[in-house]
Length: 410
Ligand code: GLV
Ligand code: MN
Ligand code: MN
Image 1: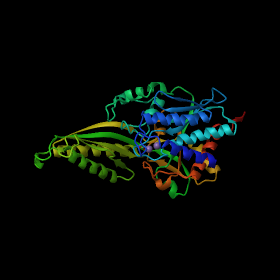
Image 2: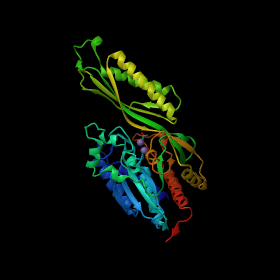
Image 3: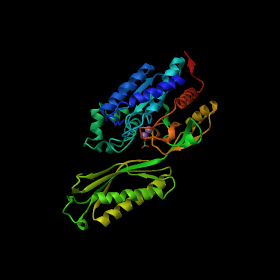
Image 4: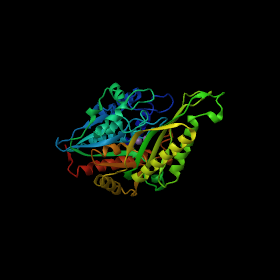
């Protein structure tokens, strides 16, 4: 298993060289870099014996048939898109670990009755459209048609991005199929496993999240001539807004509230900004707390706007409730962890995952792998080969447990 784990880590690093930006890893949804990543990961899937295709939503899909066509399909995987200036493991580790798990089954000549599909989802991070889960929601059949009208920074709609990537998301939907569940392996992206001295942990639930674009509109003017008292400066409004978001997040245990992107327009040193937009990301494990926090932030934005004589508008880009993992699948993961004599750690996820979207389709479970310093969404993201080897062992046992001892040698 150690060689297989070393290869998984090597492959994650190889994929990390495929980027839209020179010198750093940025691989948004439906871009040429994503097409190249799909081609490379697809080659590895084919080498592992899977039939490979890209579905209507740009998700990479490797299919390993089972011996009984009526036994259904188990879904494995994670995502192949990234944030800006990303690390190598957020997403690809789960895809390539699943490929390795399939390769191992074949190497050991283990035939499963059910089919296994390994998915490399196309849009978990939502970097391009400020949303998330475009690929996995298409698979779940829950992609709201209004999402198709959202535009990226260049004015391209989600609909046109899908079409240009050769797809139509309606053809990615898997509703109506006999699915056995979805299991996602992912780096923890936090410090808990390191603190607990555990290589892996079983996820209990994923926090709910809301993303929005908040725009203040004032009046642009000459930086040298418009007196300070007469300005309606949208950048000043948004500066106050950022601090209101931080204060709201700090006021509630477990709440996190972030402005990750700011833009002032027209964007010249000698022009008073007439408009400014902030991205907003708010999360909490308890949906009621998140919704109340959003109300407070909306109220603060309205007060800031009124005091400064500017307008404020909101565009919600994503809202997902907290999602509990399936008890049965999680027990199979925990059982595999226990059989290997590993520490028993159960933990919630503050980060979002494709499992959130897949939960609308089939039972979901997740296994976290320890990552150095809990660092993620940063190029320093890293994992130990030994921990990946442990995770592969857990995944291997999990697959055999799902088979319920009914897998046979052919
Ligand atoms: C994905 O990484 C997210 O939680 O935003
Ligand atoms: Mn991820
Ligand atoms: Mn991420």
